[in-house]
Length: 314
Image (tube, rainbow, N blue to C red; front, side):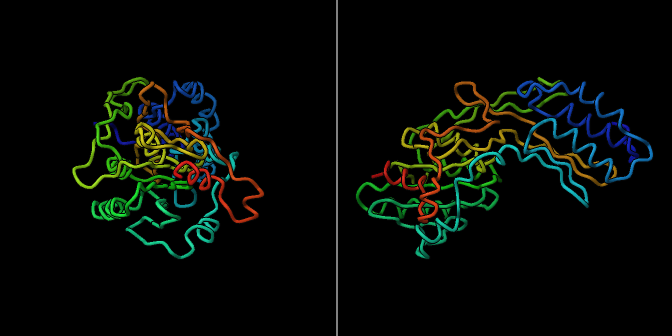
């Protein structure tokens, strides 16, 4: 049993640093000397610090990790690192999708917005992997595609999808393959050392129910984060899938959580995922075809990334 930590500024700071030291997964990948970071910030801690000042100091230290999955949460603020998308093109405007492509013709299949764009081409928008998708939702989607006749193609738009459950991502991917596919290896922290991990190979296994083996195009941008990055990786290993848009935002580490003695909560990445070639997905999954929205198309109310997907599926 660990000794119960105190709630004074020194104890809280040390608890934040120590939990990150034992559980964070990307020190080596990001070239962060965590011991040096401790020396840099620890000397600024004072016993008489107020809560806001202490929070800001701990948040600044955590910012050194450059990780969108690292957050310190209090009753008055939530620390965050958003540089993974702030300097990138938006590449998605829902109003354009709604006005030019959906046009109030879509069906809602659970959290999915589904519409037939043109002959044999269907479009799905999934706004958040935090919104549960059930087997019946996916059965309805796949059965509609398979009953449409011809050789239908499907666009799955996960731009601006900030993530949620990787299980939803794997469940969807399982509907688009007839063979087991190796998607990569998950490395999960299992000890206090910076390189203490256990490896777990991840496969996309075909679902037993309805599946679709036609052409699929997945649309991504930099705000496709966390579970959406996993989804992009899962889909990328399927031969009938093409990724179009921008590299996803990353977020390749499943978070671990710690409740601190003063009521704050700490979240940080505690795993890492490598694709079949051994590349980390923490910085994002690159598309097969890179496309950005042009200012001219935006003014015309058109989406260059959807248009490229239509071109591929035609």
